Length: 404
Image 1 (spheres, rainbow, N blue to C red):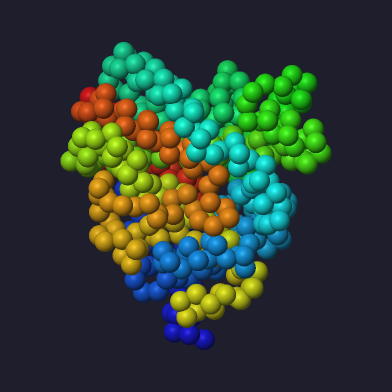
Image 2: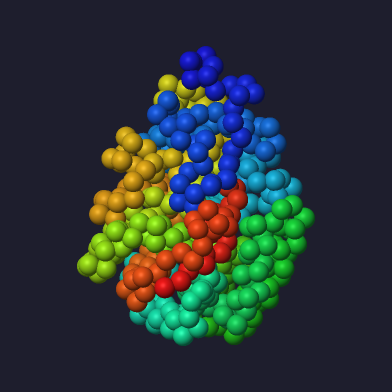
């Protein structure tokens, strides 16, 4: 047994995940886990030990390693959130399956998420952002930036892209919020059932009356040709709908909050429109909305001189990888001029976020326009009064009161 094994075994392994106290900083305990080793031992809510990967280079290598599994349906796949412990082997497409099934599903969708298509929807995104800001400014301060701006931008965008009627957005946003934020597995199952039933009907309707959204294309190309069945089409739609707005809502809100707390950095964004993409990449690195990725070792793997055994739970810490001093100078400093393109805010490897081009377009347009039109935007409450989501959820504020 290595020194690292001895140091991080037994009851002293700290609980994971933990809640943030500052919206854009890791929990204080996490900072103690950096520098000693690229991995540390932690304990999940059910007492199961897990390896937490904190090193940037080691994490990227592992996320690309086929010896790590993403198969949620495996009977001993690690459970990090209590509400999902009774999922009964349900594996979500794309995010909860391994190759070759994952590769087949991803190939179906790649043409719909390319850079060319995302660039084509930028004008409609810009119009949407302008309308939302017109409404917010007309109502005057104080406003909740989450409900007034950060939530409707990705919700409307993913509806338009998928071909989901935006008139139903309140319903699916509520179901999505209840699903990802449920306190118990029963609550999560109830929200899932409602969302599944809605999409089951929508897919059937699109088979009868095709439209021009991504789901319509998927049905025409794959479902009608027998490449996937109705249930798989519904599940893919569910994953895209929830993932397509849940993390981006947080990224917009958390990005705006970070900039408001670093007003000198807003000048970088305002001085040159060409600088906006770089500012967004640094925000993705610095805030790490998706705090960690869950995996299970299928074989023994050597990591930093320590053996991760087959069957071990492995949590790849996006937050700590993005704050690794071996990868970034002064990693705890938000620097809008930093070249942060090799961050792992969208993950890495075969499961790297399929919708990252859409998310980038939304963030660039939303944040660039927000501070161009309201350069004096600021918090309406002290920072420590901003309510935050729990450590096991996508990171971000629940509400964000702002004024100008």
